[in-house]
Length: 193
Image (cartoon, rainbow, N blue to C red; front, side, top):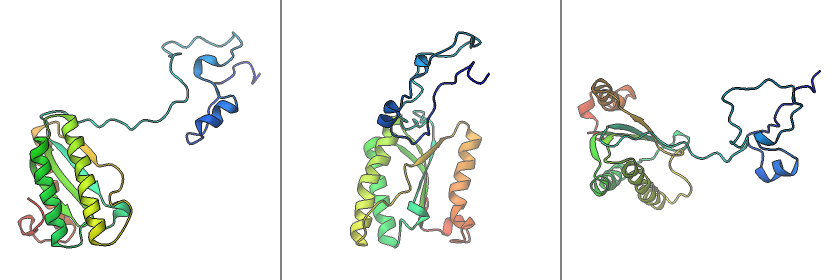
């Protein structure tokens, strides 16, 4: 019947781990078996059924261009005036130098940022974006007497795995203000390379 093949206990992904232990949720290797279950080939018994969800590591390849995108929280404005764009570009220039990241192109839109850059290491890319996040939002919050987060989560990144894709990223980034109706031609938008 239905009790011949007991299934491992599973929980909602957002249930607190301490509570799960109290109600008897066990790791995969600890589920009681009747002995009549089929043998599952390649099933790993040493992995916990429940584990803390770590952030997924970004794929950043040293020496390979990456398209970086950072959006304003709730797609809200992260630049309100010329001074904001200039402050961001100042931080960006300083941090590209500090982390030795090659910046190929950029576009600062009112509510998000696009960068195409080549970092010397994965740590350089993450470090640069972390320091921008430590410098620019406090500047913006002070200037506009606001509090809270400016960015919508972590930055996103995509490795450009071919010359064709690098060129497509250039086009996409440079045409962003034209598609958004902020400029008639890419070269007429003030806040892009």
